[in-house]
Length: 344
Image 1 (cartoon, rainbow, N blue to C red):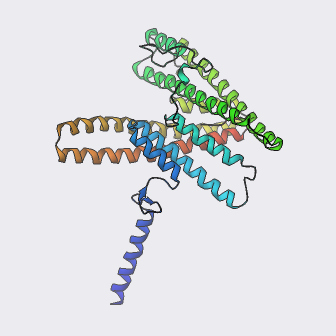
Image 2 (image 1 turned 90 degrees about the vertical axis):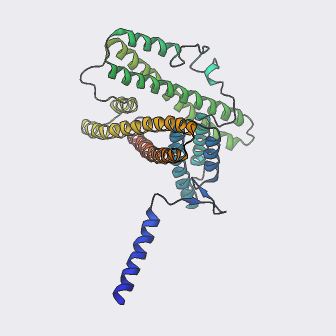
């Protein structure tokens, strides 16, 4: 009898522990409704994105960004409770990062005019047939496609580099927009002391913009060089984000031993990026198949495909978060060693 009781107690403990750490465990709000995030405004953003019917890959990317925002905000709340962040600088940065996320996914309630604003990097009207919405990038890309210097695989890699550069331009424009709006708010500051503090924050933001512009110029020069010369046989990496990190690391104050160590870490990170990209491609294919099956109306077939799609979506989100967190850690590691740069 005692043995049976002991077994039952053991099974109960194991079951409780499994429930505690299971990925199936969901977060609930005050009304006991299941929610995706622990912070209300993040849930509101997530629900809005679902209502907007963002593409599956974009939704997966947003989920990763919101998860990182959640982690940073929860960490900040802990620091604030301990009496840190008295000047509110961390809080201001978190608020700015959240506004950037909203703008990045078209959820800031503004009509997106960044692509047509003459004060931004792109000062032309988008024409039909433009691949990257930027005349310099389109010209380089067309040159690369017709040069005969690249295999099909190399062209795919180069296209990812061009797309990444386009995304960086968009990020720059979003940050510029948020800085411009902050400047408008700061014009109404009355207290001189408060004005001095905000002036310091603005100075940091302008320094960030300047660094981003420098990175963009260096990135474009790299694309121009590759288009002209082709990929060299001894290229260290293939993925754009990894290439960018490696170029940044070489410009930092890292020693040779530190660079060698970082290079090995970047190889692991590149594998993670490639794996995440594979899951994103599978997610998109699964979404297309699900839409096709839904049109046919076979309920059993729809259910099977929906289950597969949901599993892929969850896996893509999980991997996306880990990849972006790893990217953030690598950026911080390089920045601490002499290269001042902030990542969106």
